[in-house]
Length: 256
Ligand code: GLP
Image (cartoon, rainbow, N blue to C red; front, side, top):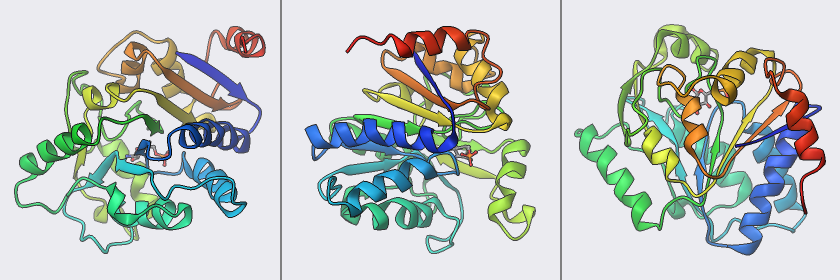
C-alpha cells in the first residue's frame, strides 16, 4: 500500500485526479469504479477542470458505481444514480450508456447484485476503483464485519452511516436502511484502488485501515491485501498515522 500525505484537501483531489487522467490518457476506454460521497468531490472537480481545458476526455470511459440505496426512486436527488449523473456523468462528459449503478429498485435484489458483478466481469474488470472511507471504516457500503470475500449484495446500513448521511436528506428518517454495494471481494479485484480522505473526522478510520490489524471490523483494512492500493490523505486525515514520517520520506524518495 502506498500512503501519500499532502498538505490540503485540494491537493488530495489534484493528485488522485492526475492518476486517473494518466490512466485515461493511456487507456481511453478504461473502466473506472466510481465512488459517491463528499470525499471524491475534489477529484471530480479537478477532472472537470481538465475536461473543460480540453486535455482529457471521458467519452469512451466506462464506469461502475460502488453502491446504491435500496428503495429510493431513480429520480430522487440522493439516489446514487442521480448523484453519479449529476457529479460525474454530466460534468465529465461520460456517455450515460457507459455508466452503470446497482439497481436498488429491482424486485429481485439478489439477482440485480449478481448481474452487477457479471457486468463488471463482462467489461473486463475495473481498472481503477476510486474510494472514500466512512468514519466507521466502511468502504462502499461494506459495514464492519463484512466478509473480505463478499460480492455485490444487499447490506443493512449501520446506524452511524445513516446518521452520517442524514445531511443529504431533509430528515434523518428518510435515509434508507438498506443498500446494494460492491463487496470487498469485488473491490479487491479492481486492478488498482485509490482511496481519498480529508479531515480529522477520517483520521481514526485511516489509521485503522492502513496500520491496524487486518480485520472485518475495519472493512478498509481489506486494502492491505491489494497489490496496488494508494491512499491519498491530507494532513488532518493523516493525523492518526504512526508512520506518517515514513510515508512522507518514502514519497519524497519515490523512484521515477
Ligand atoms: C458513503 C458512501 C461511501 C463513502 C463513505 C464516506 O456513505 N457509500 O462510498 O466513501 O460513505 O462518505 P463521505 O465521503 O461523504 O465522507
